[in-house]
Image (cartoon, rainbow, N blue to C red; front, side, top):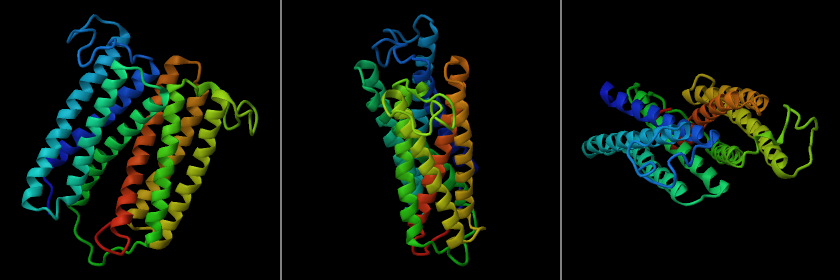
Length: 312
């Protein structure tokens, strides 16, 4: 089965658009621009083009990008559906990704509207980011599929033990928990709870209260997540071979993990410097969304190949 360059470009555009939506949402949070359009939705202060303020421009830009991305995702879903009707077996996987992207795009749009119309607590707003990252992962997986679909079928299917899937599942769930904690820190403005890195306020174990406790739990969770990723990578290499594409993907996840740790240290160093903090926070978000997307790819492929079926 061959995937056309036009369809791949369409899928890439939707993936880039979803990334822009996610980063724009993070920018809204980091600049406290969530009320930039007042409590109006979908209009902004009751107008299509309101009077200019920085907060209004940021919030309105986020809405415009989100609306355009919604159209892109809908278009990709329709395109996959049209192909799916003629070859259901071949397009079952991309249909799953496209439907997932569309579903979570709608959910995040509704949550965004609710956040404007009614006050939403930090725990709920953190879930909003979690929904966004799932939507991005779906578009990213669709792009990966468009490249993988054109590869020749392996003569000897890759055998993946079921334990790889179980390990990947546990790592993915834990990753999502860490992402949620990071989003919660942003929405509660708790980033300054731990001054310094790797120590927290100069202590190995600080007083676990308030913002300090939240940030410290996030750091401990990040360490445990790092150990899980490292173990997953080594186990995949051992069971599937260091040259398998599953091992290569796990290698990229490990590299992104290192980059995420470094960006976390950089983020901590810029707390209090608003301009740099916004930039480092966006970098931190960018790395984790890519890491999560690749981790989802490992999870899905290890499930599909857990009895040695198909191609990886």
